[in-house]
Image 1: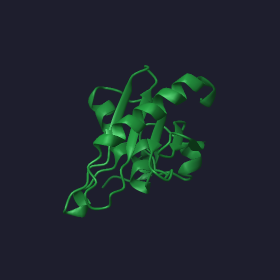
Image 2 (image 1 turned 180 degrees about the horizontal axis):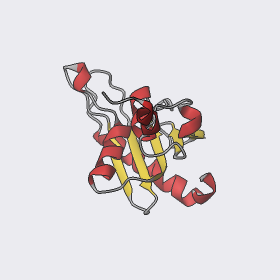
Image 3 (image 1 turned 45 degrees about the vertical axis):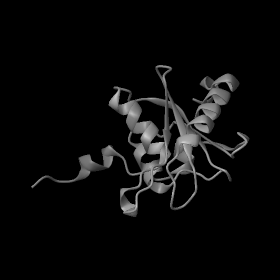
Length: 141
């Protein structure tokens, strides 16, 4: 699927994530994250990390972007970009949230300047992902 992701799309995704990052609410970690997801239908949704004094209530930028898209009816993603100062990759929870909608999603990781540090598939980023097909194997009581 990466052949469907043009250089222009890559640039647009990274720029959207970079711009969104300015709105990150990170008063505790000071680790601002911006994300942007491109759907198969061509729509783009951005997200930021939003921290909370009760740490478990914090949500990552990647999930904000994904959930915005899902709340608008999107279910298929072409690519997701994440931008941090140091090019940090999506956390495990975000990887699992993305896996719900397809392991073929391309993941772009960029640093604060917008330089791509990693381009990979979600399948490579989350090997042996837990998916809905595993639930079919459970016997119902």
